[in-house]
Image 1 (cartoon, rainbow, N blue to C red):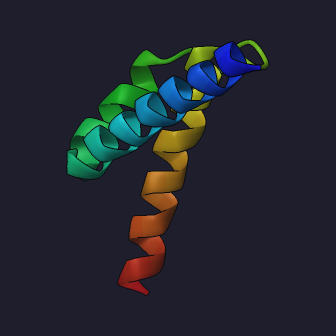
Image 2 (cartoon, rainbow, N blue to C red; image 1 turned 30 degrees about the horizontal axis):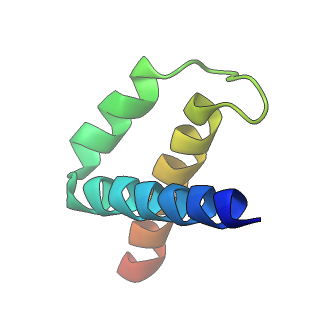
Length: 66
């Protein structure tokens, strides 16, 4: 159980780091990143997670503008 907790903690830290990097990118960089990623990433892959996080960042910015 300890190993699972450690892995989940590391995963959480990594996700927070990625979200932080995405938040620092400007709109052009985010769109460039999305163009580089596969249009249909494998379900559950790191590429899929990154794609979803990038789209969420764009959506959050669009909501903030409204």
